[in-house]
Image 1 (cartoon, rainbow, N blue to C red):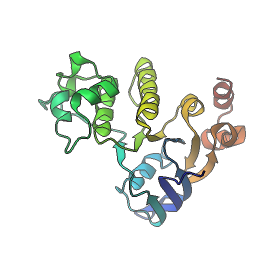
Image 2 (image 1 turned 90 degrees about the horizontal axis):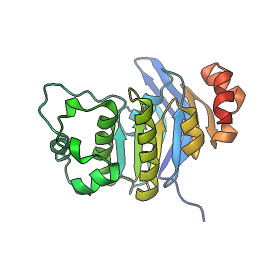
Image 3 (image 1 turned 90 degrees about the vertical axis):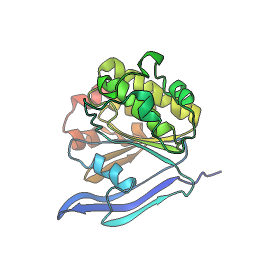
Image 4 (image 1 turned 120 degrees about the vertical axis):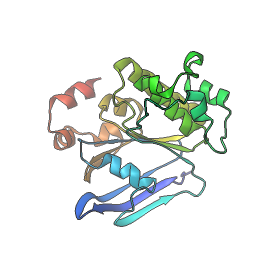
Length: 231
């Protein structure tokens, strides 16, 4: 039995101030699938996610979401004012119509008890990412969109967050779209990979789509492919 996609993108293009940002992008994602979007800096990855959630309006093409889909979106950067007197619990309590209690979402996202009352500005990058993840999970989404979730997070924190994302995908039965530079993540977790450099260079199952030639086109490097493919 074929499962209908929760998101279908067809021939999507985006132009901003006469500059072509994205051109001819097509893909789909089904319930509980993991799609990784990879590409060099400036390739349009973040702009694609912003277009999917309606921040940008596509110049042409279509974005079709299943009507029952609930989206959780974590942007690439979230700046916290160091003078903002707001704790983790106070921040999450601002969410309107949450589908989980705070205790439930703390448990789901493994937010430790001792820093629930900490000021947001005093959190590490990894801790802040978990809080933002908790904010998205409170809505009980059917798909989570992450834009470079590991940026500025140390190696230990990265492993913890990746494992948490994988666990949430399993326990909450959500689909994931993750923008990343980490090919190890792609091979380990992704069902599909989209290679992007303004246009779509590859799309499909990682071990079939990520050929040596495609990675050379994308990142212009040989060693990255051999190191990652062997792992």
